[in-house]
Image 1 (cartoon, one colour):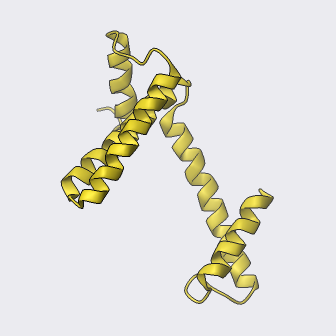
Image 2 (cartoon, one colour; image 1 turned 90 degrees about the vertical axis):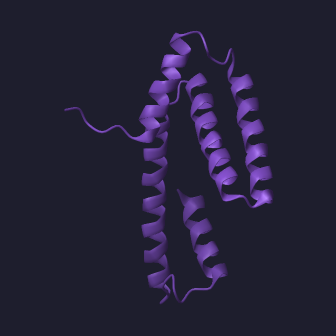
Image 3 (cartoon, helix red, strand yellow; image 1 turned 90 degrees about the horizontal axis):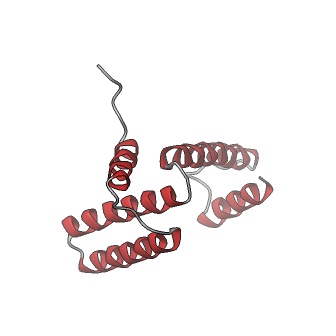
Length: 124
């Protein structure tokens, strides 16, 4: 029995199959435009307030971003893992820096949190 694949890995595999069948974006720029189109459709769904449409369009945004990334030879799962690791490190640093100021996420103001986050983000 094989390992369970993540939805990102399944999306990548699905796109690879489509590409192998000749259904692929001819350029990264065209894939980028499709991503932008999907973002606009997501915004319209948000404006409608219809939850099923919002979820559908959000999925399309994610899928089109993965597709665009493939045209740039980017692996979505690898990129997301790196982003999560970066966020986790920054979040832990945020908590530690707030603690040095005698604050917690529950007691700090939004401005304090934003200031500490930006200071750490700019230093890394």
